[in-house]
Image 1 (tube, rainbow, N blue to C red):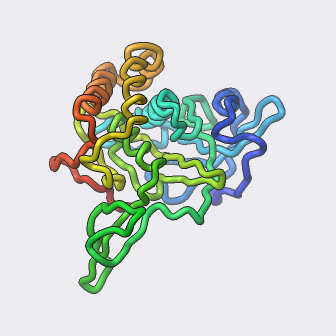
Image 2 (spheres, one colour):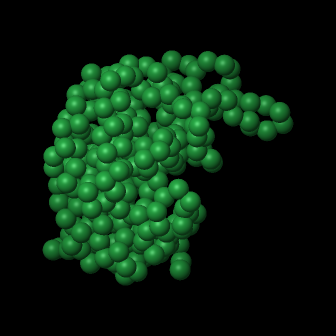
Image 3 (cartoon, one colour):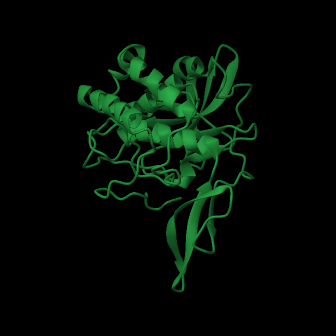
Length: 275
């Protein structure tokens, strides 16, 4: 299948309240395959009632088996991550639905155009980050040299770090961060989430051990209540009962500790490759 032809969204953004409905009800047309994805990821357009947008379709049939996640569940986990993101009110995950497509049931997510000028990650010399940056750790850069890997001290990233802690994201790479021209930031690729075991693996460790913001604390309180109500009902078809209980427990633990989590030591803290 050829590489996807770039087709910009037509009048539909991630903030559009009708975006999820368009994804769920529209006619899905495959335009190409996204190269480099670990699972089948198809670039598509979706059209309904005179509106059209670009999207990514990941059929369940194209998921590779993983030893630590049940087969055929990654698409549903991506939708579950979107539901939790929406419940926070932060809008950190593009509209995502579970639907039938040309290759069977799969995840369908609105395409996000990236604003390439926004710098969120960097390699710098020295042992301490400059103001406005948070240290992740040291990385080998060749010829026996190391550099400090840093991420921006950015409130959008900080909110995403909280979301990742809630959904237990095992794969927050730099390439999964999508800044847009309007100043928003989206995270994508949430297939390996909601495991009952602690698998948090991320580049966003810069706030580890620091107090949660007042905003994050209020959001976590709302999530705690929502997980016992409407949000819990929406997640029930998407993840297991044990995974839902584990999500509740992670929210409760964050509220009890009042700080961003730190690496546990029993699971690699940073994904590979990191970008």
